[in-house]
Length: 267
Image (cartoon, rainbow, N blue to C red; front, side):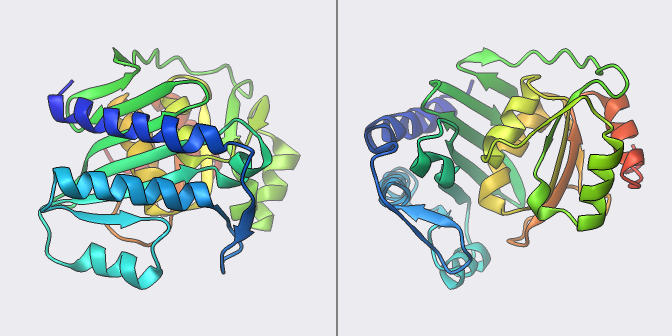
């Protein structure tokens, strides 16, 4: 693992332990204009990491979920040597209600590529991280993916229903091309748990860049396969929300994409 990845991972872990854990299920929440939940923990965590990253890497831009849309756009389009992309608290609704499923997600984008990703789950003290072309790790141990496909219609699917079309939701319920379905409430952890073999197939209708960037890199470096409903790469170096179809096993990925009516990209 590269020393810089270790350095950034340490910053994220320390901040989460000191800012998020003491506030878990102990802060009030409010709602943003888009209806999503926000707490003081989101704001404090973002401010702390933004300051620390600016001090360590003054030439890199910073994009955080809790910025305004105009601020996010400005950070994304200005000339830069690199861009930090942070979700300070992915799973805020869970966090505010005392549900122990949330994470911090930080990615580094350089030359239109995600080159570093860190997702930390402070409740389980699990840190997933990845470096482009160098692999993925869980708590300093390489993620050894088994790539075993689940038996036909017997796997576990991670599906976010609320961002899918009604027609597809009904089809998923009526036909159930899996044994069981989960929705955990943290996109970053969805990707990482799939990379670790804690699910077989994945489906999400609309993810923001700060939600998926770090977790997607972990998943891809673990050997996973993913695309959008349009059969494009999930990451396209834009702020536009992206859909996601994924599986760790290639054969299962092909079957899952076909069932959804999406032709996998040519190899």
